[in-house]
Image (cartoon, rainbow, N blue to C red; front, side):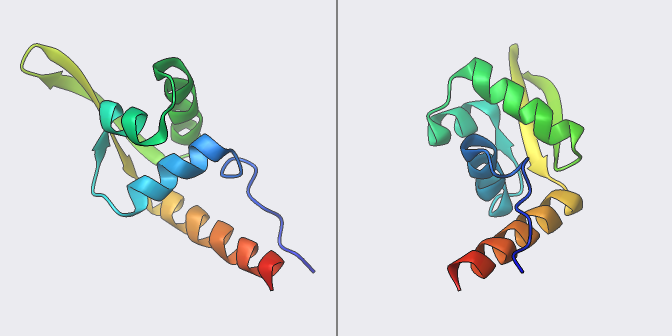
Length: 93
């Protein structure tokens, strides 16, 4: 019996964001946009979905006079990612 894949993480962009955040304490919006190749608008929408699900925390602030958005993965997000990877392993064999 296969475990169901988390539909929230099954999106390529959301999975990329979570994967990046698993190895970082935090990452800013510009870094995530550059690493994923996403448009600012699409990335913003996907970060909102991950935040609403409790998988990441998003903090908005300023670096000098420039706005800065940073993201960090939550314990819930780490657990969801680990379960997603285990589910994938079940499909691979």
